[in-house]
Image 1 (cartoon, rainbow, N blue to C red):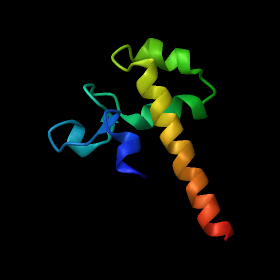
Image 2: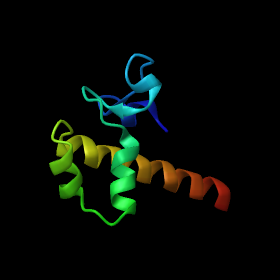
Image 3: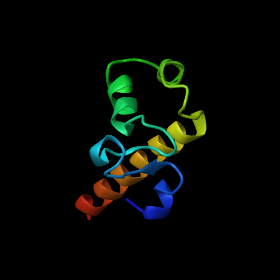
Image 4: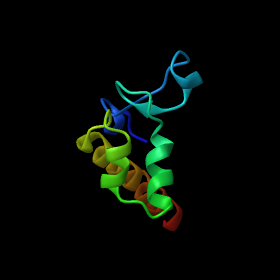
Length: 78
């Protein structure tokens, strides 16, 4: 994933949840967002349950995931 795509969105530190990737300035793992969506919950439900995550952060994280996925698909298809 491009570093610039996740700057200001996601951070990892051994001091916060043992290095689990979290939304910057929170203790909310990014995986929680994916788990919510995978379970059929809406973005709004996730944001209601984790108010320390800003909507913009969640959307940017999803955009970065989409970009990474599409880059991989293009790599393997050529």
